[in-house]
View 1 (tube, rainbow, N blue to C red):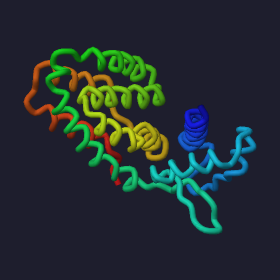
View 2 (cartoon, rainbow, N blue to C red; view 1 turned 90 degrees about the vertical axis):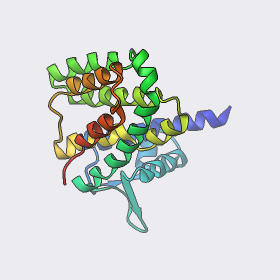
View 3 (cartoon, one colour; view 1 turned 60 degrees about the horizontal axis):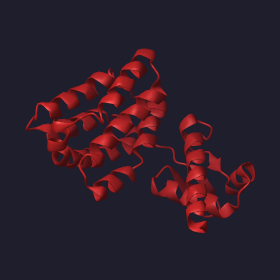
Amino acid sequence: MSPPVVHSLRQQIREHILEGIVSGRWQPGERIVERRIAVELDVSQTPVREALRELEALRLIESAPNKGVRVRALSAADLEEIYPVRAGLEQIAAELAADRLARDASALVPEVAALHRADRLGDAEAQVGHTVAFHRELVKASGNSVLLHTWESLGIEVWTALSIRWLGTRQRAYAEEHQDLIDAFLRRDPHIGRLVKEHVLNCAPRA
C-alpha cells in the first residue's frame, strides 16, 4: 500500500538530514536546499519537504520567506529548554514503571553493559545511543503509550548528540549513573521519580 511506503521514505529522508546536522555536514545557520537533497537521494521534493517540516517542529531548522530553510543556530539556553520537559515526563514514567522494573529490570541491563564499553573507549556516539535507549526502555516500562509518544516526539537522541557536539557537554560516567538508577528501581526506592528527574536535569547543558 502506498501510505506506508511514503511514510518510510519520509523517515529515511528525515534520518538523512538529521545525520547531516548532527555530524556537522550542515553547520548552524547554513541553508538546507530542498531541491539538492531531492536530487541527491533521487526522490521527489514532496517527501523532502515533509521531512523538513518535521525537523522544523523539533526546532532543529527554521524557515523564512525568501530565505529558505536553515539549520538553527542553537545556544546552550535553547538546548537546555528541553530538559525540564523531559525530566517531568521521565519522573512520571519512573513512578508508573517502579513496580514493574523492581521485579524485572532486564530491559535496562544491556544498555548499561554497552555504556561500560562506550565509556572505556570514549565513544561519544555509542554513549548517546545507549543512553537514549536506556531512557526509552524506562519510559516504555511505564506502559503508557501516550507518555512514550510524547517523550519520543522531543527528539531526545538528536538533542543529546547536539549538546555533545556543539557544546562539548559530556557526562563523566554514563554507565555508573545509569547503573545507580537500576539499583534504585531494584531496591524499590520510594523516591525513584525524583531520582530520575534529578538525573535528567543534571545532564542538561548550562547556559
